Image 1 (cartoon, protein in one colour):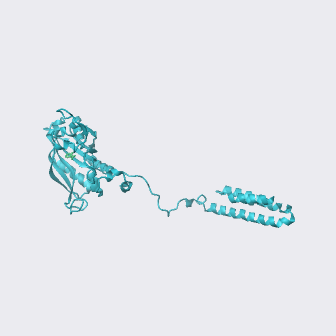
Image 2: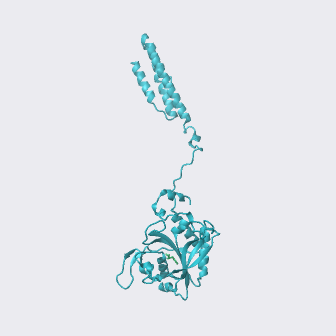
Image 3: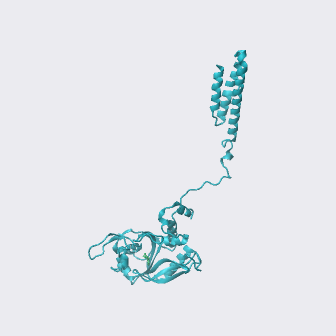
Length: 346
Ligand code: PHE
């Protein structure tokens, strides 16, 4: 009988769990205090027949030892736990937990930086539609009807017109459509930049993509000169690529500007000495630009005798690639986190 009770207690004590001081005290009262179960059994020993007493006594001693060992183990565990030692909650020697905050896309970082630089020069930001009419993407911008840029190989057409009048609907091939829309609805002075997505029917490769981003700028007012264009882009280059940057203008052609110039910036990787990025020329091309063609001003209802203007356009991908030394356009759209994580905190 008593042996049954001992077995019961052994298994109870073995399975007991104690997590805090209150439970520890309850354990002590229940098993090892003067009124506890083990003491009670010892008190009972005198009622055990003489011949069994020795064996039962040994069992009880084992039980008592078990209860005391368990009690001591629980006590040590509680004393060492963080709850009883608040300083143990912080282990200053551990490495910091990684901060998985996500990061801005490099194109977003660069777009925001471009906007910031021009906003400080008094430009505001305008947006326009990506699905556009021929007029805003081409005709108003002085593209001749047979201009090669209109052809299927460059432009994604949504619908082609049948008749004489060009009323095709297409995906815009540049953000210059926003210039036209702005000039149509706002009298000069106009000083605005236009960031946005553009589309061209090109095979995707390391250097070309069918979707990319541009920022265009337009400044129309009385007496806007070619010098204003140069000063503006020179200031931009210094802010964007470093204060020692130089710019150079190369004659170029765009239907909507006359004269037109390609803008190069001195290579900020090698400082102009020559490297892979600048293909050993010391210069990298960053933008197209020019004085707004009088025809374009007139197409948009602005008197070209009274007003002049300059415009420029640059590719955000190109500037991002130059700035971060990225050599493949496809990285921007693949969403590979190993690539994107490198811009955390940038
Ligand atoms: N729209 C031109 C392009 O997409 C860039 C440009 C804009 C050039 C404004 C001159 C002036 O290439």
